[in-house]
Image (tube, rainbow, N blue to C red; front, side, top):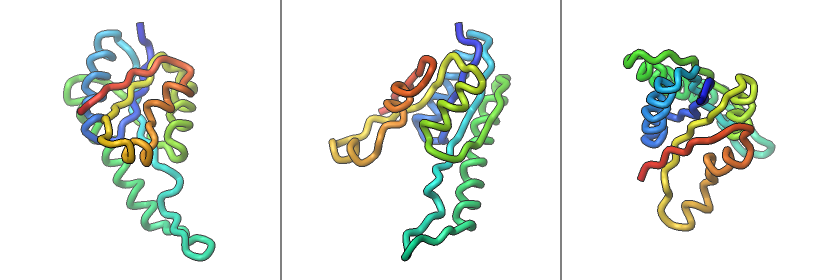
Length: 145
């Protein structure tokens, strides 16, 4: 039985599907539920002769990620589920696994969308695959087409 579940939420179609599945699982097992969104560190850094840090771009991205997180929390609350949320900054996999370990999570839930073509799969690394490798607990990957 799961006591604490972390949902890696990005607002995408696969993330929303994972949110619904995670909500059902949390209600069934009476688990504590936490949504996390991760803002990568590279946002706002422009490579121009040594780099320029764009704080406005960073702030806009933070606001977008915070709005996605709040939307996910509102979706859960509208159906009676209770959940906490956290906006993290850094490497996606490292931050999710660190947060899950800190709250002693039993399960991490993440959405995944199959990418078409080998080029797309090669170019974009799989967060779900990396989570399975690095997590201290079970990982549920919710797949959308």
